[in-house]
Image (cartoon, rainbow, N blue to C red):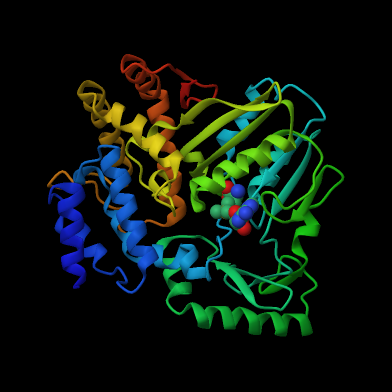
Length: 424
Ligand SMILES: C[S@@+](CC[C@H](N)C(=O)[O-])C[C@H]1O[C@@H](n2cnc3c(N)ncnc32)[C@H](O)[C@@H]1O
């Protein structure tokens, strides 16, 4: 099959043949020999259809990401392993939510951050917010070696000095593509660099390139510990709070359910569990909130940031399995919001003007959301996207989305951090 025929088929199935030529052009780079990538793209489009996203509301940058980046960052590009992609500040809203919850005022609680990633940026952010808490970060991919090249790109290597994962200093599309265009060569380059650096270790920790051995240990304090392992694989004390973010998007529903049983066993009575996903600066956040009551895990809310109504990233639809119930649940709520014409008119008026002002994924002359302004770097773009989410909240569109859900028969509220929360 030709890639163009494949794209036409998807366009017809999911967008009534309305995708723009430039979006379809981006998809032409899809590798037809990567079943996992094609399935991912189709799943993404299926979720978009469930969420009632018309072709004009899918940013051109999403086409670029699907066309070129997915083959490199999906587990299929990493020998089936879940890549520890993470970013500082990613859980800023989640930390704030905890602070404003009944737990936020309490001292000396304990918390498990499972699938914390490496470097454990988000766990470290949380430690700053809760200095009296004892926090445990757990992840199966905590590395034995961490190697930075002279550009600040880094790789994690296992006990056999094999590269497990690498990431650009700033994870933009171009920077990823530079490292991933020949991923075998990049892995080898980092393995060679490790050998060199072990023979000539840099003494100054600010110098590049450099190596760190058992790098996780340097983060540990009497209040912060790390363990290598996964859900169901580590022994820990009963916890007040468990956070599991950007992990379940990689697993199927039966794993999710088994994980819930394990989380329930690990939580103290009254404890709270947050499971969800998001991206830079807590954009595209969506998560379920559970409490342990009378020995049972009860789902109390499902919350999301209002930018999920028109996201610029892809986390909103990111799932490796068709039966991912969290994405489906998000799409159910987004579709209700998107079906409300009065809300959408107000949303577009405000948000499209913001996109134009910041020159990020603004509408083109045919009314399609575009990409970032020319030569805009990733930090500027994501800074702008975070600003736009704050703008949506400040304008009250998050509260109006709550009203829409309430009018549609659900019970919703604006939660403590301005997320739209459906209550159970
Ligand atoms: C995308 S990263 C998320 C890191 C961090 N929580 C964040 O939100 O930025 C996903 C992490 O899940 C970890 N992981 C994979 N399988 C796991 C499992 N069975 N249990 C716990 N974590 C797992 C991976 O090693 C990886 O570091």
